[in-house]
Image (cartoon, rainbow over the protein chains, first blue to last red):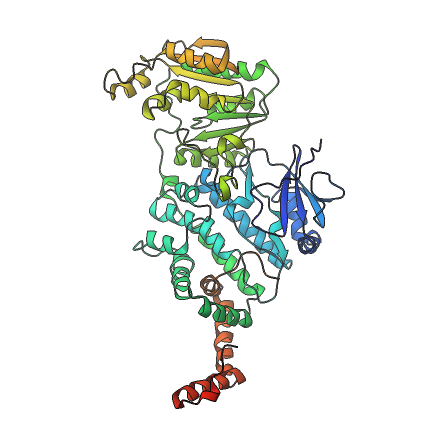
Amino acid sequence: MQTPTSTPDPGSFRDPLSRVYVSDDAIWRGLSKEALADFEVLAASGFFEQALERGDVVATELVEDVAVVPDEWAAVLRHDRIDVLSYAYEWPFEMLRDAARLQLALTRAALADGVMTKDATPYNVQFTGTKPVFIDVGSFERLRPNEPWPGYRQFCELFLNPLLIQSVRDVPFQPFLRGSIHGISPATTAELLRGSGLHKGVFTHVRLHARAERRYADADVDHDVKAELKRAGFGPGLIDAQLRGLEKTIESLRWKQQSSTWSDYGDRAHYSSDDLRAKEAFVTATVDAGAPPDLVLDLGANDGRFSRIALEAGARSAIAVDSDDVVVDRLYRDLRAAGEQRILPLVLDLSDPSPGLGWRARERPAFVERVRPDLVLCLAVVHHLALTNTVPLDEIVTFLADFAAPLVVEFPHRDDPMAARLLARKRPGVFDAYDVTTWERALAGRFTVRAQETLPGGTRTLYRCDPA
Amino acid sequence: MLSYLDPGTGSMIAAAFAGGVAGMVVFFRLYWHRFLGIFSKKHRAEAEAARAQLVGDQSADTDVNA
């Protein structure tokens, strides 16, 4: 079904040569005359065909007479939809590195066929499970003689510099990328890496880059030197050498958290095996009960155990969300090694989920607006939100109701060992409202409880509910 | 027709450095052009203007950047 729409996607305005329109079943891209000429060269190139076959670039075809797109455009492309959009500030280290690998590999392959990428941003890469997919076909343009790679600075700001600060300094990049849609400038990165010693690529791409930018910040000087550089000529050989150098730098990065063993990872010592089995059975029964959900949202997923159980029970795909980027990075690498492409692991702090960002805060929509699950799992999470993040129980329920989907939620009672440990740190009387009665009243305000079960240990209750 | 992203001068210089041998060739050509430029019409005009300023010749008040 094509629903006519003439409002372009608010995230697609940066390149004036094309705009994106969204309908229920597909993504449409209006191309200007100039962009169509670029696409014709692209479509005739061997690398593009291979990239489409491998699924490295989103499925794309030139279409005629589309009601969805206004007729001001010279031509229209149809793309397959990506199930769930995610952004670099929700990815762990290895996901951003894989996205960088794809960006560089595609740009190098394109270059060999006389095509260039006009930009280089992780917003042009999406993940279906653990497979990175390049979605911005409008980014490819004909290679212009003597011109440098236009995406170089952006590649540094949004791929290389975030990966560098995390690998060299163990500073997480997610807050930086969420803080600015433009990424981390060479100058800021140079400051963050000051005194960090020798690391591959840092001298050229960060220190020299920052220094040269400062030196040529003056517009007049800038113009002359730029014209001179273009006259001196950036050939494909130079650009390929530059891309190869970036590839080597990206491969050389070592983040120490990836090699350390994570003792708590997947540790469920606080559960008796009976409790765990009952919980698994409850989730399986929920997925089994109705039509198999297309998308399960697993909040507080840790090692992704319940995402996998939901898939085994018939769910088509899952998003495994956790606030700990080390845990999510481990999960991503496990899933990638297993070739599992149905689970998308994301870094997200539930007490502070990704807001709308960019131009008018609409360029990159908020997590809750972007993700439309058919089932939400919220296991071993409520006590953390209520006691660690001090979110009132009815607020937690409202948040869960925002997803407008059936819910499986676990509530640890006051006498549960984990809840008791958190309560022991609080002044008596402050968290008296944390009890089963208040919880169930809050839940009933937004959901209809279809089933509930107290785990064999007697300190945790599971609820299966539908939105009221 | 240029891309919508404008590669800054600093990025272009870093890019040439990152290009290894091929980048050195670009710098070589850049300085070679500058060297040849010494004998160019524009350079002679600049030299004229500089001399005129020193000597104080009003008629040589031309915009060298034109």
